[in-house]
Amino acid sequence: MTGLRHLSRMKKNNLQEQGFVLVATLFAVAIIALAAAFFASRVDELRTGAFATQRWAEAERDAFSLRETLLHAAAKYTRDERGLAVTDGSLAVDGRPYRVSDSVTIRVQDERGLLGVNLAEDRLLGRFFTSVGIPAAMHARMVDGLNDYIDDDDLRRLNGAERPDYATAKRPPPANDFLHAPEELANVMGWERVFAALDRADAAPASNSHGIRARFTGLFTTARHAGVNINSAPAAVLAAVPGLDPSRIDALIDQRMVKPLGSLAEVLPFSNGRLDEEIVGLVGANDWRITIAKADLPFLLECRLTITPGDKDRPTRLKECRRRSVDAIAVGLPNEFSLALRELGGNSSAPPQPTTLTAATDIRKTNFADRNERRESSYAIETPAPRWLAEVVEPVRHGVRQLR
Image (tube, rainbow, N blue to C red; front, side, top):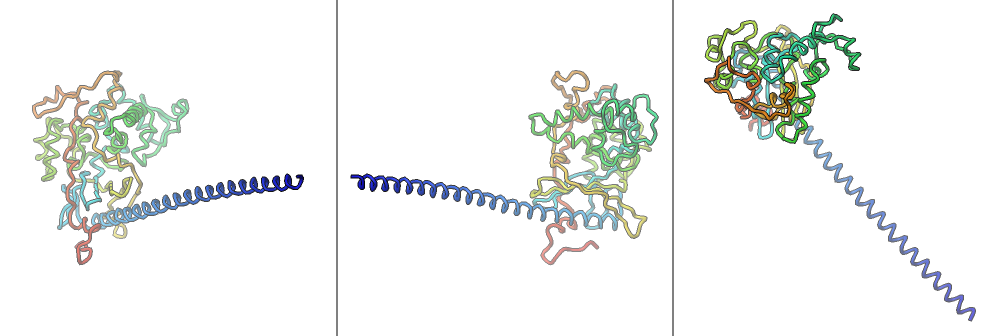
């Protein structure tokens, strides 16, 4: 009996040991399966990432090729009211989108068509502030604050701010130097409420409000030039030019899309007062902003170049290239700035009541805050790029044709 009990106990122990080994084996198999699935998933992610990196590299290669072609063309060809005068197809520098290929779009913006903040006309800035709905009570503080931020002294203007004011507000001190990028405007005391309002609009549920801050800062330039080029300025900048009729800005843009304005006499039909020749210009400056977008890139490539015709060794100079959000060139609401900034007037809860400007609108009765209600529809339509530029991305059958 004792032997039978011992034998039964041994069989039971063996069964328990076999069960434990089976469970351990199944557990190990499960761990190996999970590890294999994890590593397979990681391999797929790495493969996807590698493909994305390859597409980005190819897209950036095309973008840099376009940039180099423009650098060469800017150094070789003359500039006039049209922009870049090339025999095989001139290139406008008013920021219009050129379709280079099915997936590539390029914009070239003459920076004299933008609002210069380093050598800004106080009157021009004030008119711009009014046109986008910034209350008049804020204008002096914004203008003086900008001038104090840039100048190299510690003398505080009446409505400005200097180092002690920034220290009291626990903010970085003023640069006391020219701005290097329009985004630095957000650091200037007096401008913080404007950018805060733009940020709130940026975060709003409406999809076409995204990027409004980028589009606002995109209207400014740090290039050191005076005046505004009527042939390249966007509508929001044209609205600030003294003497231009706000109800005729659409017509002016339509006209220059067909044929650039060649003299101040040709600008008169679009004016309602005296044009200041110190502000109004018809030819661009030596600074360009180039924006290249490609379907495979989740960002824009923005480059700034300066044309230096007097330097034979370096006829063009590349200042900088950076990646920017695609929202910077998105088409927003027709009056997006006045809608976003209406809260600055102390009536943020009131619904916006836009008034569309017509050709019969009298400037004396026009609310400046309604000037940017018009959507720049012409800027939303892509123009086929000149052949010499398109061939950089899509070579002809017998190879890329060189600029003559």
